Image (cartoon, rainbow, N blue to C red):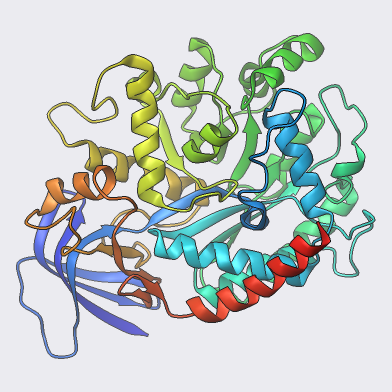
Length: 455
């Protein structure tokens, strides 16, 4: 399918341009002209066009438990108490439930400016911990949600073997996650079949964390599919850092870097608690720091040192993780604001003499595309035709163009004022609404009422 768009304004590699004519074929940008008028048959989009934002980290099923963990218990609340709520919630899910929850999350991602997703998928087995007849039944549910909503997908089947550092036994709440190497190989094969019908989908691999795999699993995983994305949770919580030092004798990122050759294939999710050497090692390796500011704030994780990391040349992207709020602009805003709160200064992630919004959007789009293992994040020929347009009539944007409009969309709107979303040349969101919104919402509502009644 060929699609030609005429864009009022667009963020291109060399800056904002006006009257941009973009042609795509089979989902890929094939031609791009600037300062030209619309031609008969063009689809004309007003407002500000941006490269679609990749979402580099999500657990889609957690959209269903959003808001259920905000009650303080008798003990001190933390990530670890939140995790127990998550275990109780997922105990009740079957593949149909997961597809309904994921489809709702994916619609919200598209309406929130995300056009692609790296889904960190660890919920594999039946409620008793035994594999389904199709070991990738849950992954197929994720792929089904991507197919029905149109969101671009990188599926990351997660290897989860142990309960903590030192190969401690897994606990009851983790029974639906656990595979050994043999069953994981079967999971990879079945997951590849599950995503085959999707356009431009990618299968990556993910050791859950240094807590959940053996160190020798890391090189084994990296060798299975050369060139494929590799994602891992690391250094999210101070307790994790303390356990790593106590049990393994090293800080988590130092331990990871000593065990496997970090490179541009790797995405280190959170990487919140780093010393200077660890931070510089990630930046020098070409790995991407996968930042999830809204979830990290919700869980009390801490603040990633983005200022020093960027000075070292580090790549980053953003993800919606627990999906308590799904909006690309809000993730970028909180990322910047967290740096300001810590350092008591402003515009900390901007380039010198450059607007903050452009710096944030460009860095996260390029880093997120690398983490997804897909040709995304820049509007130029050869890249996937993924883009979003912002509503120029939104109160935060009225009278503004280019850099000022993007700054205002991120920092002066309650949520990113998305008007249109194109994914792989398909027009999925118009006037801010996904074309399947009501159908997906109806199924999501039925599943949620069932799950909440059981809780």
